[in-house]
Length: 103
Image (cartoon, rainbow, N blue to C red):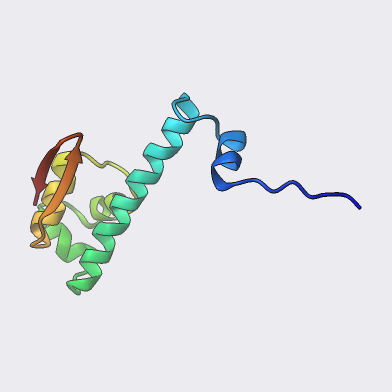
């Protein structure tokens, strides 16, 4: 009887995307982080019962820009901070042993 080799999630990531620290893996992880930040902004907007246009007005940007932000594109610290500030929320960014409040 043949045995089936099972792989952990990390083993599969290493095989498919590359080892931690490789350019391809770093790019994938950065893209994932941007997506998760965009999703957090979208979820907060929906909890506040705001449309993308309404959030855009509060941020001083167009609805299309809010859409790009929620899809994880065009994200900068300033943009993230403005989004959460417009939503009336404070978010902490941990950088090593320092914590920065955004919003």
